[in-house]
Length: 52
Image (cartoon, rainbow, N blue to C red; front, side):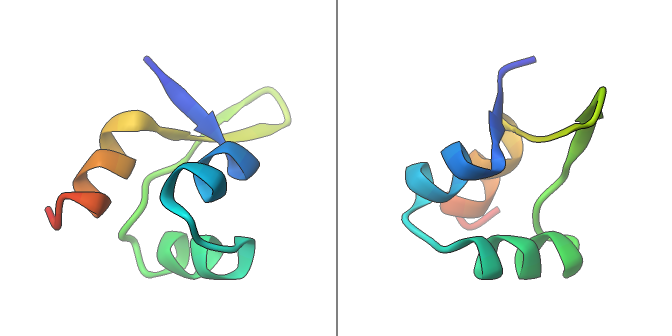
């Protein structure tokens, strides 16, 4: 699984942390926990950017 950290996802999509967490809260972005780190699967970011 290719995944982005929160900071990497913000940079890749061009949004701030607050907006990113809002999208997670709305269920529009998936997250996974790896140890104590939260990551966002690349497929989830692609779907968001692609409008899916």
